[in-house]
Length: 149
Image 1 (cartoon, rainbow, N blue to C red):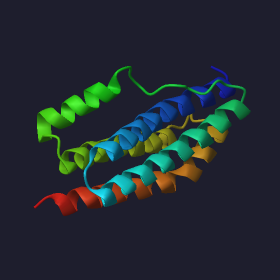
Image 2 (cartoon, rainbow, N blue to C red):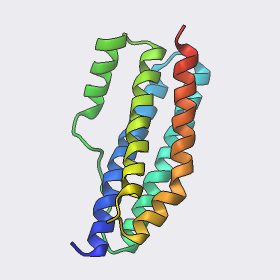
Image 3 (cartoon, one colour):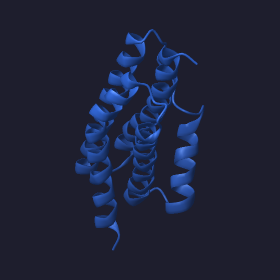
Image 4 (tube, rainbow, N blue to C red):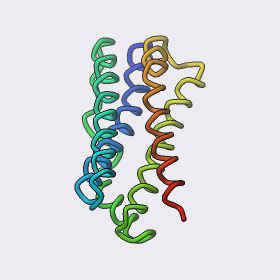
């Protein structure tokens, strides 16, 4: 696999996971009754959108085609089914699931950085975006812990 296509492949995986997160946050922002939580979700959805755009630009710059979808078709139904089944349709349920999506994105970012085969262009972009991934992860983890009584 050429460096260019490896860059696109690596970053497209991250784009899909970040896009899932953005969709989940956008959806959850419309479902929770708490205005403050809803605006937090909207803000984080915006951060995810910026990550998707930045990664997509890098894929384009290396001659690749950015991923246009999330990781799975119907993932929203699956996400809400899981929230309702495990935790009820509650604010805590959304926070817990969203924190899980943060874990997934952070792990994917770290795995990319730990992979010695990650091309320089991909590594540079992932390194640059990592702080915003870590920040939203921390925010959601703190929020989840604060809600556990």
